[in-house]
Image (cartoon, rainbow, N blue to C red; front, side, top):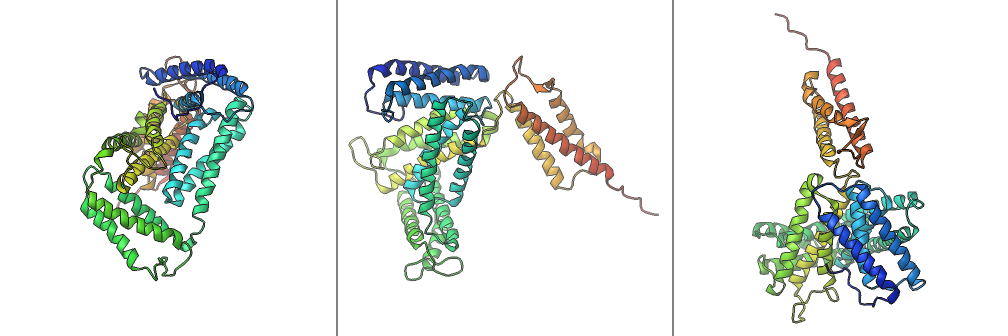
Length: 445
């Protein structure tokens, strides 16, 4: 496979054995990723992790103070760390330090694109900030449990994420609180336009509806400025007015192109549509079908296309730049891809894939019990028999209080047992409430 990202600095003599070892380790990780005949175990992953950390130490020693060099060794090492990070998630060790590496890579890409796009929701930033807060807690908790070399790398990457997040918040700082809803509405409309533009069946009515909202906002302008929801012109015009104009211009481009893209970029467009479709499917079925390591290839495919840009734009085979419509369409698909990967990463449960079938059954059972509670409970304890039978069947799978697969005890026992106990508690509360409820008295003749 090709390396990503691509570096041009030469590999020095002392680093060549390190590169060969890292390439070998990456190949082993890729073979392990492709083997779907059985679930991944911690004992499959940990020796490879130790080997990678050993090469990181050797690389640091070889470079000394010249640690900022970036060449093919760094590219292959990044692949190895990405894969080992996703494997830690696949075996249910999400809360450990190595698992954080892949998330930092995704957040850096995502923040870079939000900064470049210059439009995003405050909710986007809140989600990233919450994720980083959890990663910092992991960093503090595990600072003496893992290699200091890995610790330093992840700490540096979290700091890079923090810096980008700070810049994104600064960009929105000129928005007055009363203008935030207007900004959020325009962000939502522009994203809806971008999504509409990439649908397999183009909808003229949907475009007219979105454009109608834009025209209503345009008509409400006072001396070239947008009022807030209370009709007052407040701070943030430098952001909301250009975004309104951008939305209007893009809606015109969408109508002109009628769902087609410049043929010069059709191949790239088709690749990005396929990536988005696959990731969309995973978001719908991730609880049952996702192995976190599958995300590696999708992220790398996005990285290849993203890194092929020059000065932010796409160029055809003859070196001619993409027009505005093609550029915005392709960038939207790249950003959507990174956003979907982010969603899948934060949705990953701290449970080994071997225990996911049981864990997902319990999640479904809990949802059903929650719905029963919301709808007033049960009128008779007998109505709880199906839930009790399912809970007992799952409970009977345990051996000495643990769920086993063969002779293995997969990671995530605590999460599954906690969920099982929660379901038992909910069923008990429903049964008690039904038994304590006063019986209806028969009516007198």
